[in-house]
Figure 1 (tube, rainbow over the protein chains, first blue to last red):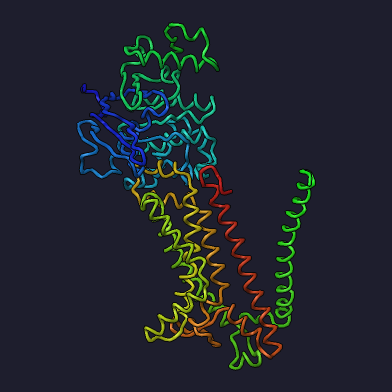
Figure 2: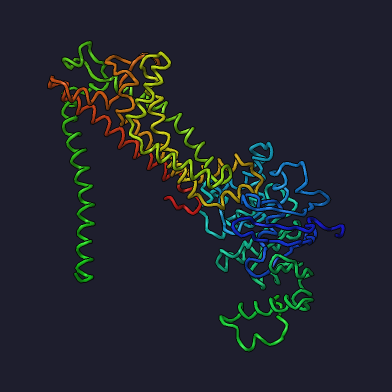
Length: 277
Length: 286
């Protein structure tokens, strides 16, 4: 752990109990640096989302999740703590995979978090709503229809609304769960641009399926495989010089799948993947 | 029979049965509105005139006592039942109870829903006798509320279940408490919840068996919660079995009032639901 660690996990183990217990995370210790964007990648079912959600205890809304280990937000433990859970979740914001507007107006979607956490005057709320809608480049598109339902926006706009909503409670860390996977390419690009701007000010942890997205956006990359941490490094060395065999295979395999419909002879050669930016 | 004949025959059956629904509805509503309407033409204020002292014998005055009785009994019952039903429905979601608990409670609710309303009437009558009280408006309210509660709860539960889980996740993700999240889920499911409340209201205002021997079958204006009162469905039964032709004709006028009230309610529910559906995520209820 370095001084600029914003949040870190210590030997984190998450099990979903049921007819057959499933260990989603198996002793993961990893640190996320302040004001950086860290991408979590790995094959489906490797525990990416579980790791993300365990950072603000959101997996607990599933009744059968059991956790061992600890997460530290700064120096503070978030599991073994007296701090109320809603306060922890305020400090570690979450943007869901499916763009979901709360059943409120556009204005109140952004103001809702602030309203439940504190007393704000109408003027302060007006100010806050405008500030965060501007931050996600949505203000100009919605400023004349703030009282319309959030659900009437386009999917891409809703996802930026979700970002604004999460930022408006002034979190220290922002968790993003495949936030562009449900979007069309143009909307996805807009959300990526927004994230690009946000990472100057926020610690962002992002789960993604897209290697390209990780390459474009992330400062650091974490690779999980079957609930275990395989590799964590800065983006450049992760893609250009992976330390582990599994990482190499995954990066290579994904390149093939991403660029061609079927893995081809060419993609199977040992060429290092080319960073797209 | 070849596949195409089969298809054609079923198409006919499907259309015919749908047409039958329309025909029955048109006939029932039409007859009621026509015969009830005739009473309103000669005596426009009949629904707003208090009954004369010998109303059931000579039809003197009107049946405002039953209109008022229905409102006084069913409106508070609907308010009480809605609060209980929405609270129960929230409890049945995974944040508050296990799947097994909610399955069991839902089964009980289905039993309650299927229980004939006359049984609730007898049940409340037992309470009245045990308490040494008299049949009165307030007991009618209790009986109707018990009758409405399972209907509204099942509707609200289904509505809450169909609200997208992502709303819950988003709400918790912002640091909302469990109660704040439950409120948000109800908002997301509001069109369905309102439909349930209106359905409960419509069933309540139209039910006779529950109030038959709990509210007191009064033929006077209701004075207070402990006065005996009557409702439109009971009055209709009594009017229709009267030997006086004028009283009998009033049964259609009273039915007219009931049908218009129910149609109006359904209209209001559609309008409200449409209004809130705009806010529902994905607009799935619209």
